[in-house]
Image (cartoon, rainbow, N blue to C red; front, side):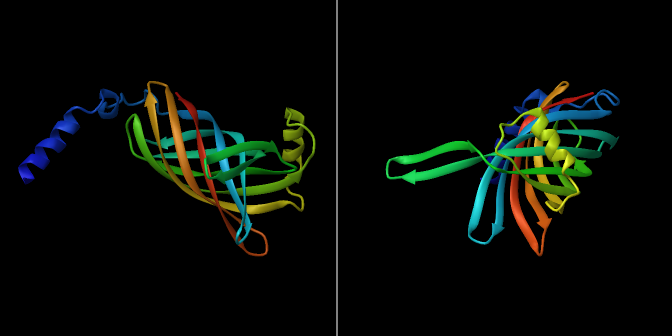
Length: 200
């Protein structure tokens, strides 16, 4: 029985896609990455009360070595997801919200080498809460950025982990973690991001 299990595992390994097993030429893609992403932010300001925000963001990272990157990222959440469960299924809808969190984070990412990577990250930064009834425009995002440092800004820490796969210079990244912020206590909030990346 053990021999059959080992043969099955060996067969699966040999049948793995070539991009998963490939070794990259040193210096080929070891300078930097840039990417955009959609994010989900489960905001839980009090126990038993949560709000599901969605938004967009961008990140950039510079390689320190094959296993380490320094990354900076920022995202803006402007819609709330409403989910209702009925006897005949689940419905979901999105609505632009008045409360709009803006998050900025910076820190290291530790990754496995190769075109398919597992990584962990730990970042520090801020979360800023602004309010607006206006439509989402680049000008409103700029207003939220200019409000950083005011009364709605709080220290944030973010431990997370994820996977990314690259096909040459193009890749996709999925990441999840706990965005903690401090405001008369510590608040834990689930954060999930997904999006394309370029490396060079």
